[in-house]
Length: 536
Image (cartoon, one colour):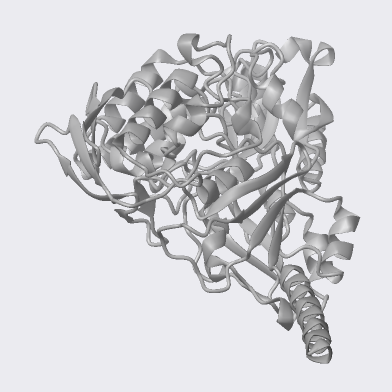
């Protein structure tokens, strides 16, 4: 009997050891997707709006509607909606059973709270709804109603940027006192490093300026690819030399989009790595400060527009095309046949002579900030400097970290004469680009360093956005684009391609073959599959 017990004990110990090793092995086999990003990355939906922030928010939160790759809208957290005859009331029926990451159910109360909070904080994508949404009402547990102050033609499209937060989660993590009265800091400090969402992924750890680590949410209600990564690590963009090493070691699956062309060419030689790119309807603008001498003078701005060598500029971004006006040509509502500048130094000098600064050129320096994290942009800055010298304009170029770029655009006096920044549509229509780039309510953000503050242009944009009939709305967009080209508040450089290198040998990335036109949706991790066993 003792021998049998002893034998059983040995078998149990061995079995436990095997099970333990199996569990350790399973833990080691956990799949991870590592993606390069520029920082800062703000994962609070009432704060973040740039490229990396939008990517993270889309994965952590759900919206009422969803943009397809074809540019259409389909139901998402809302299963249906009704619109009143006067287009001032929108009623949404929510899907039942959607769970937040803490297990509680998403309801109309959370939708109302999310819109109210976004408008109160007034940052990020709030500009899309400010001055348009009057109130949000809860009709029942699963029905929410938006009451608009004025008609807003693309309201449904704009709702892709209303991320739904768990009200109880936010309220449990507010800090008092704060800027928002009884709501303290409205949870802004907490949401720097945590989420209150219902998305396919949830925050595991955030180290500011280093990475956002997410893990799959097992209770997600929507579609998730069978081999979507267990964890996703959104890394602060590694140094250029480090990118090659990380790809070769299979320690980075998808690179940042803003790497020098020669880096993409080099890493494509690594076995299993592919370089992919597609037109994304993102324009690279030279944003000209319309409130600071000498770029406050229209003739000076036109001189800069004529002096630039656009053909050489396109070499910076292979596959790009010269922008024709302020709206990407692939975006619905773009005006065809707009005037387009080309290099003509004689016309540049002619405009310069009309400028009130012509007799002061030897005393003036144009300041030009370029983003330090995007090495290729230095080529544009040096080209601009060389072209300007040909017409007698002195340019000082300043390598500037992206965080500093964001900071200086908040103050008209700190904003330099020229900033090189790319901007894409927040929803798939020309009005999104026009409002972000040129309406006063978005001035002082990274999207708009021009500081136009033009009440007439504001009125025209508001009128176009309030127009329900799409054809008439697009006609108004066209007139606005003509006026903007005439006043040249920016230099419309080129429409960029979105480029990435990725581990094609073991990563299935469907959006790379069929990209979504809306910024952020090509890195929706629930659709990207990772097969660690296929690593070369």
